[in-house]
Image (cartoon, rainbow, N blue to C red; front, side):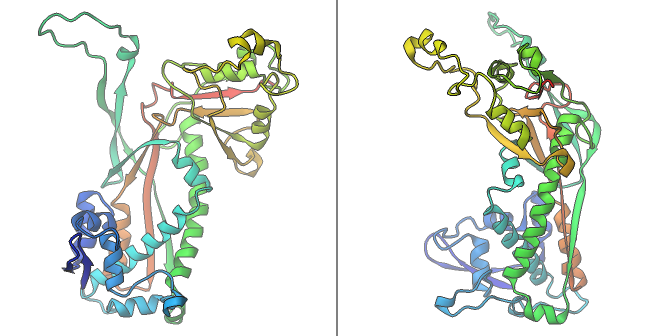
Length: 398
């Protein structure tokens, strides 16, 4: 299958797209087929489009029609016809069928990225680091900072080795990532009538709902322990332990600020997760600056009449709030609890890039009218189950 792209010099380059370019080589590199192609043909003129985008255009594939130019939405049947997809049982046309799968995946991902208000997109902002592996099992990295936290600056003798402060190792237990999948099948009539845009919209809607549900599972596992990646529970602190007057389901400003300042040498709370009811308790906390029950005498007593804002502790105004459903509706967090973390270092996502290839190969090789989407990932605590300082849980005392 031949495709073309315009390079950075304006020249037109012809490329023979092979099956291993879409399957074997990306898998070996730990990349998606699109990422692999874009990296391989990095000289593509980005003003025209990435290499993969230009490949599709040269093959007559586009996600949506354009009435101004007389283009109608392409059906799946038209896409297969454009790519000369074989329906036999041999290997002929494997690269064409793999190209169809990747086109649907890319178009679906593009639609999902446009919705930045989804739980999935918001949760992504809490993940500090991502890593990719090519199998469903891996050895979880373990970082030991205990010597660093207890260490002091030392005078060094000439040519003396530095003290060991940070230790890197891997877990003794081999972890296994879960695998999710969904199937899609069409009849010959649907092949002629169903457009690529309609298919990707439908798949994106399903995946968005499914991924949003999975966010609840991730939150529960990293704070309460569970699954194969996180084993221990993050301890709680009662609001009354931070301020004796913060009882009866009432959160005080003093308790809130002291909660945010806990372990400040090791973290800065950037995100909190809670129900809508608990969020309103935070917003309506007693003693909050700007409210009628705030002691205005403090304003005149500090900083010459100006509001005093700490520069080395988050004061709460820049903390992002992630809202979850009530527990009765399937939410992971009980009413009156606040789960907090430092998004810079708390969570790491690990993705098995090989999961999607088995499904793609099955569709490409078997010539079936059914397509399967597989994905495999997990969320684990960056510093393991021992160092939980990037996390905290507040319980508003009833």
